[in-house]
Structures are given as C-alpha cells and as structure tokens.
Image (tube, rainbow, N blue to C red):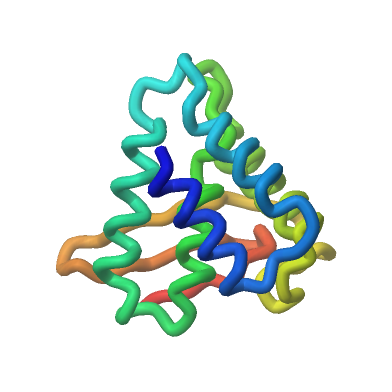
Amino acid sequence: MKHLVRAWLDLSSRVDARDDVAGVGAALLGRWAEKQRAYHDLAHLSEVLERVDLLAAEAERPDVVRLAAWFHDAVYDATADDNEQRSAELAQRSLGRLRVDPDLVEQDRPAAACEVRVRDGGVLTAYVARVGLVALGR
C-alpha cells in the first residue's frame, strides 16, 4: 500500500492540491480497503493506476485521468445502485476541499457517473460527466 500512498501524494502535488492532502488520501485508501469489497479493492485501484500510467501518453492531461481513477469506485455498497453517483459526489467534495484547479472541479454542476475504462486497442478514456473532472482521452 506504500506505493499507493506515494502515488496519491505525488499526484496531489502535481495538481497543486492544498490543505489536508494526507487526510483525503488516507480516507480514500480506507474506502478502497473496506472488507465488503469483492473486486473494487486496493488491488483493483493499483491495477487501474498502473494502466493509466502505461497509457498516459494517450491523454492530454493524464493527471486528471489519475484523479478519476482514484475516485471511480471510491464509494462501494454491494446493495446500492448509486455507487458511481456517490463516488462522483465524493470526488467533487474532496477535490473542492483540496482546492484543486477549478478547471478540474466544477462545483456548480450536478454530479453524475464517474468511471475509468480501458477500451480494446489500449486507448484510455476517462468519463466523468458533470462530475467536476474534465473528461479526457481519445
């Protein structure tokens, strides 16, 4: 898990996050480590981040894709059908608290689905519609 802590701190620095970067990172890692997670766990997060790194050259702003990856399934309740919505709202709140660039977080828009997907052919696309993160990729 140390590599994930380092990845979060490095990313936070690159996007000029301020205030409680360590606290937000610890809370995110705590979410990803919850016992009820069958698939969307720390190993999954690590794998997604590794794929983002491998395909970073395909994105105009890969750090925004990395932010989307960190939050894409941060809220997980196997009995709920609104995990993506709640993850998007968490991203919006957390990134707002960290005062990241307003181009990355649009506070006035309603949150929607947040997902990071690797398509066939190795093209990375981050979809975060009206979440507060700018959609990137090709």
